[in-house]
Amino acid sequence: MRAVVQRVRDCSVDVAGRTVGNIHHGLLVYLGVGRVDTAATVPAVVDKVVNLRIFPDEAGKMNRSVKDTGGSVLVVPQFTLYGDVRGGRRPSYTAAAEPETARELYEAVMHGIAAEGVTVAGGEFAARMEVTYVNEGPVTILVDTEKTF
Image (cartoon, rainbow, N blue to C red; front, side, top):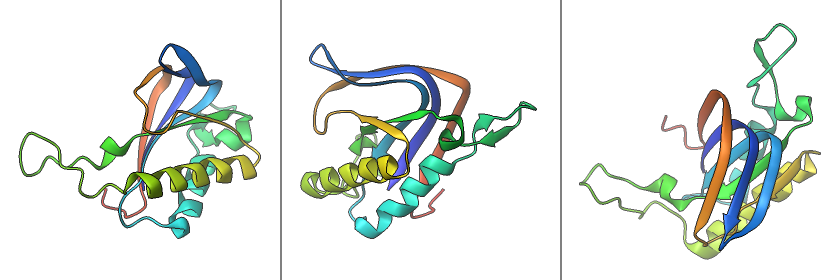
């Protein structure tokens, strides 16, 4: 799985003019599921998201997690994280999981985050979404379970 994790404030996702998910303080996670991902991949992503130390402590150092701060997580499915442009200008998505598998694993990540005691909201799978947010810092971290970067 691949995730783009951003520390945010006032984050929301809309589909067809209606808000389907929003948070006020925490993390925005764009989540892509790859062909090689299985249910065994989920715990690693969940652990990384809820325990990533990218929030400031009392000294201003990034030393606290979303779990430590009582923040929330908004997870947005985004298969385009598996877009490969090495062969040309039009992305190839052959490394992305099939929609049925991707949906199942996306939902498993959301359930895993909730099981950690963190409030979680989500986008709408396979929908055209509009995401609005304020990136605090800015702080943006890339996570890849295959450790390709």
